[in-house]
Length: 311
Image (cartoon, rainbow, N blue to C red; front, side):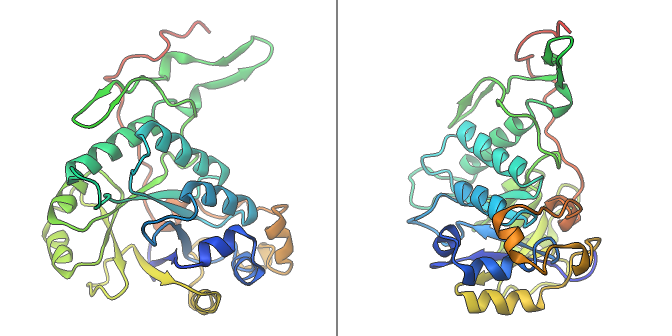
């Protein structure tokens, strides 16, 4: 992406609850900008305790505000990678390929190391790629729903997780949901190299380490509020706590590159977007909005989940 960084609007304090309840002071400003700004919403960035499940709220948001890119925060607490992969991929399908996941460690859990989070991300990404969408046939005449020779069993037996089998959902419209890691240590930053699309940084020391790391495989940068950088950030994380702050941020967020003008978006009647009747079909995927290339996890060395195709 060229120009100004994409704004990732972290909804904090009472905003997620007000969004879930359909508060017009929160919904209408977002509906008026659906598909028309260089921004995405981040759900669950406020830390624990969570009053709303980020994936569930992201699904509700995708229905209420179709076209708005959304990112769900995942710290893995009580959430097995298979369940997490399925829930977040469901968000991606329902949003039309406009979603991502912000992974982070659960600092309160014993044994939560950088490698623990990295293993969780690897398993989830592998599961996201285990059932290629192109294997779907759905041919009524032949009675073939899917060709199974491309569906792979993940077959992961690691230090902290064991998973065998394919996810019961085809791959994302954007290849994979966008993966981010909100890193807080040098070990996490090093483990993120080559693993995720983007890292979220707050610590200037970690920024220096990121800038000095090899470019090959280096994740893109999301700069949290107040982090000084040389302009190389793909996105900026902006904390938003009140409807007034939300309206003020939306007023200055630049238009997304390649998206249509307001005349091509249902901004004149935000009620349409609120009721979910109108979806801006040419709104970009989250990958396109962030200028990220297609991505996949190579599973060619994994066993077939169902054996050879009989189609």
